[in-house]
Picture 1 (tube, rainbow, N blue to C red):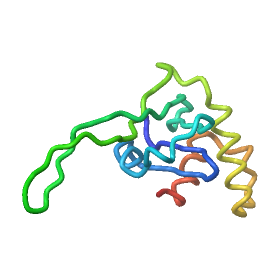
Picture 2 (cartoon, one colour; picture 1 turned 180 degrees about the vertical axis):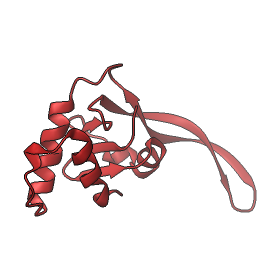
Picture 3 (cartoon, rainbow, N blue to C red; picture 1 turned 60 degrees about the vertical axis):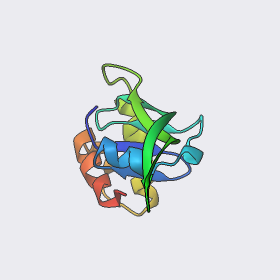
Length: 117
């Protein structure tokens, strides 16, 4: 996976690292129709896993808690055009007046970073 990580839900989310995306997303955020991609258009998938975490206040209490993890669905990126279209659609809606269709995928990714979470 090559960051940034893009999450398209009812909103546009962009994260500069995989770890940031995983820590930001909550299990209740995960929906079947979410679209996730890395910066090259590699399709990603959210999965809810149960992991041991420690809660500490007065003593350490290990518990299992649901967490969101993101995995690559494909080894080679096959969805660059879909990623481009989603970014162009978002940037157009927030008022970017430049000719986005002429931008490279890398340029679109760079433009989208100003909206990172």
